[in-house]
Length: 213
Image 1 (cartoon, rainbow, N blue to C red):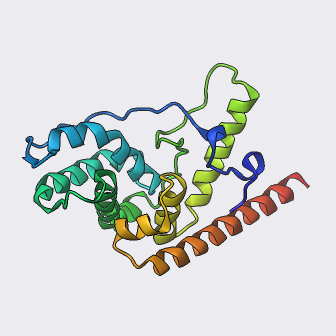
Image 2: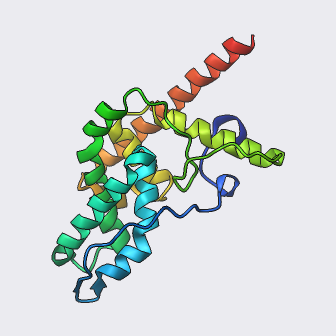
């Protein structure tokens, strides 16, 4: 994956940090707890994270609330399955990826003709500002829009591992544990995802040069 932030839309690093936009909180299932794991505390702490992750994995904003609610219903139902060893965030990530995969075909049918919205690093849809923005903010917004459009060209498996590696800064071993995959599978998928991302960027550059020639 390219490392040129301005020209490639690279999403890592402080240059692409944005102010978090907290999504609308949903009604939580009744509170329950298993040992030290309290559902209400988990819900409050991880709600925004689950919403952003679902958006990063390609869930349209209009469907994100349904996905988030389904994720926490699964969390609530599976409290007794939590081993107390795996970090709660990683445990929830595994649930998020499975719920998103379960909804993906429905989303594809319903939203196949929708134009993807640009989203920021935190998963919130971006809109044009009515007031003049500094040059660096304009460049940042353009880079983020480009990253999202390039991610849209990846298949679901590649996008999944790339989002976890780049946005969540997870290692291949952590991704493998989260997704229930062999580490070699994750490593190979991640390499393929980065090649696919770079190829998508190369196509974007070619289209840009053609339009400006």
